[in-house]
Image 1 (cartoon, rainbow, N blue to C red):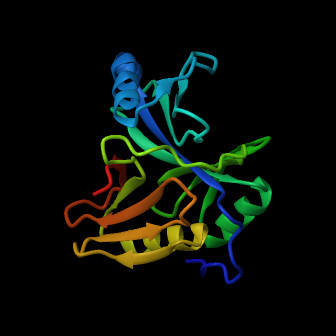
Image 2: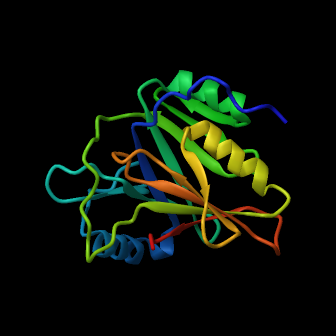
Length: 204
């Protein structure tokens, strides 16, 4: 088990949460997320039109995206947006990440528990999306089996540099990002399964 990095991590400038869902639900999923985030859906992009971004009003930066996937019932993943992708990837590997694939400006990693994440070049986003009906989608919950929970929590705290804090529910810890970063994380420890299953959640 590698020790967490001792040097301060490179700054995460922005985050994107991806809802990865199968193609038969593509239209309904995009309509749902546009409605609950008060955004409009961008034109589809990618070789098969599999990517879309939910564009908030005004000058706010987008933080929620959709990707159509071919297999499975769907999941969620996070993009960590940084100014220097190679340097951040080296930091993440020291914290325990595995590199899955790399291309210019983008690296796909896997956490110690097997959760996928991406490190991408920051595009200059600065203004968080607005509150919609007294809520803002600003968390993703990582559900981790008990055998891997402590190691996974330590990994995410080390790789992000965000403070891990317990909550009133003993199975949950919350990673708190800086105020100008649109999305944080919660880690929950399941008592019934050793397999990690990332799911997105609404803020309380």
